[in-house]
Length: 190
Image (tube, rainbow, N blue to C red):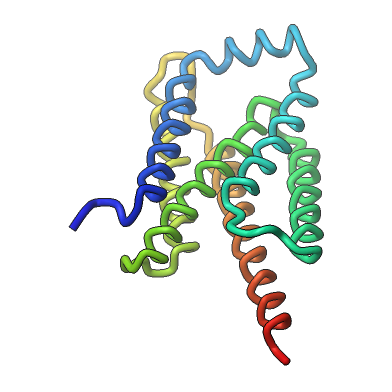
């Protein structure tokens, strides 16, 4: 039996590895990169923009059919929740807020790969919960790696941000699937 259930599942896991590679590869230089960006641009505005772009990309990657009005309204609501979460995380520096979109993307890729696997007949128990557990582990691993680097520290608050991001995107994706199902059921009933 092949490792992957489809070419799409393989692409999703590969994309996840690329994203994680980029996150983990920049752990040592992240403070320098953030300082450079802070000198040249308004980092908060840039991160809000990148968060919105990430949400749009995630939405485009994982929408399997054209969204209806209810789905668009829900997506707008989700973006508003992300922006409000971004703005309300007052204890965090703008650099720490990047966890909100980094681990949203990680969790969305894990979740979508698991859903693809399940849809192709492989056994995947509770894909949303499994995706959350995997994403939480990957976020914790991020902090574990940082604890080994000379200029970084293990920060429990970052673990919380990673968990928040993963929970928000998986919950949003679950809610979107629920709304799609309800709208589809309403359309198909006489």
